[in-house]
Image 1 (cartoon, rainbow, N blue to C red):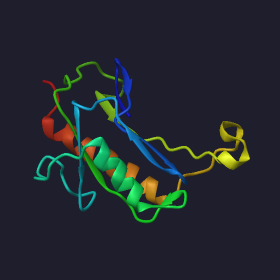
Image 2 (cartoon, one colour):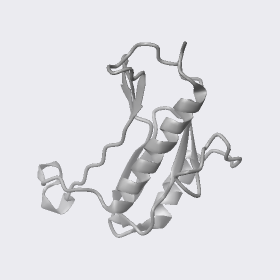
Image 3 (cartoon, rainbow, N blue to C red):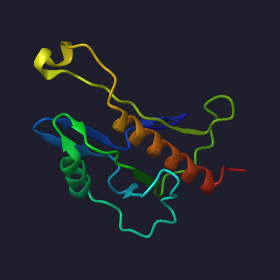
Image 4 (spheres, rainbow, N blue to C red):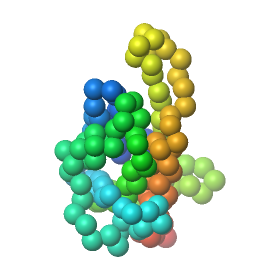
Length: 144
């Protein structure tokens, strides 16, 4: 999720099910997503080609074991051509990147089931994505 004082937008949606992985992003031209070797890698300096939605879906699909990921997937996000926010969200914050994970036991009645924490691998993915996005925003500089 990318949030400014004017609102919030999803950067990437990933759904993992026993039947497969499903990936979507509403910012197909404004967000470049890279597979990076570690959370310390700045995606601005990574020379690989950004992943397509099909490649992202395949990346998650091949790592899917049952209903969870077999190993962490670390992604770097570069926000392209988005206006630099100038309105304070509070406490001097102009923009915020966050992640949200939910789990649903479809066998127990779908959305009426009790939400449970996501596996550690999705937590690692989310933390890595947040760190990389914040690094990119910080490198772009804040408005004077």
